[in-house]
Image (cartoon, rainbow, N blue to C red; front, side):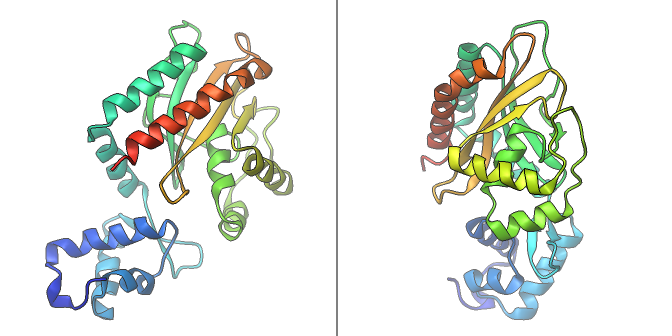
Length: 255
């Protein structure tokens, strides 16, 4: 931990706040951030307020804790895309797409829902258009449910209390009790399924990509129209999906 206001150059303090939040991997209070940095109390509160006003941080449900916004997530995604591992990461998606024969995605969580970071389209003319930059709901997509299942129980309860469980298709889970039950099953089996829950005639599978601390970082997923692939057939590609997730984890966190 750094100690003393004078030891930290002004232009580094904001970055250190963001780094401390990334290490925590959960919403944190300014006091918890400062335990890592060691600035005067009034300084850390002023800097956090500046980051909130600039749209990089937002207050969590309990109003005391802070979490990153979509603007900060976009920076993270952009840096990941600019890293030397991006070409290799995309090759993993291309290989998975070629093996499965369907569109494959890399998806992260934002306030608005799951955000498509990268995508490799199927060569079939019949495809589902969800381009990079799209947002999809948490509760009815394979990647969204994978993210929700990764949350600790307390955070999950907070999320379920504020989520609008809108019906998007005939199999959308709209009861929070049923959704929690589904998420517990996802935790046990390690992958998530969208069985025509987000869109009629579409199925999807997702697996988690975790950081070295075992925390959810993103999800890798593929989806297909039911006219071309039944859910039972999609399940036969689970080993390929898990292998692709492991390869991307190695690329992202090899340093």
